[in-house]
Image (tube, rainbow, N blue to C red):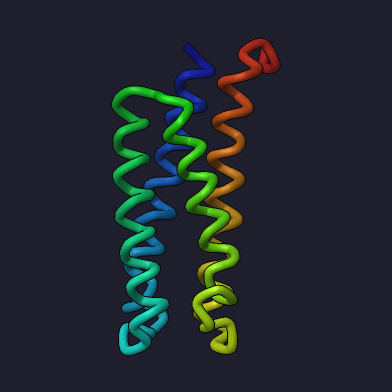
Length: 117
């Protein structure tokens, strides 16, 4: 039961990160920069939906999709050509690293259930 609660807390963390990503264009002030703003909104909604789905019923594939979305956040400033704006780039990279860490940790916990015993 403790492992399930730990996994749920990681999903709550992912949900909070998704919300932070979604509101980042307004908070940091890059709503006028359409490419990074839409990237933040779309990935934020996808991460939030995955986190909510995983909170209701855990599925390992949802965590893997979150890892991929986190990796996308890390590389998207360069692939979408907005890396020159350091605040926007740092927001995407930092949130991407945190999403990858939380989701990878949830997958690791799922695959190694006796690691906490």
